[in-house]
Amino acid sequence: MEIKYSIAKHLGVISEGDKGWKKELNLVSWNDGEPKYDVRDWNESHERMGKGTTFTVSELENLKALLNKLDI
Image (cartoon, rainbow, N blue to C red; front, side):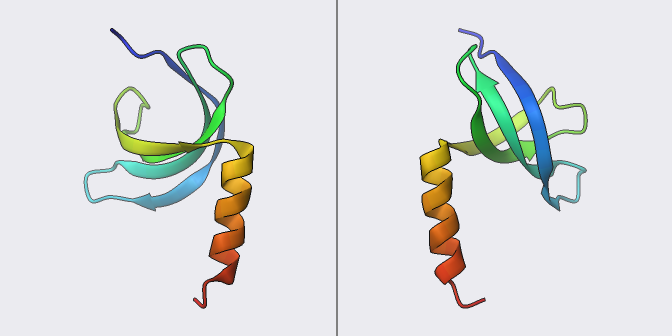
């Protein structure tokens, strides 16, 4: 089964690897579903991707609260 995806909105680059792949935060629709916040590595053309994690708005709000508590 082929996975369908569409980047609804590019939100930013978190880091870039030695081979040009970028860890990005995007809003991505997977298999025609509602777009979710997504963190993963992408090649320059966004045709290939690495493993990543998706978040609903509620999950991202919880993550943001946890990150705000970190002493960094």
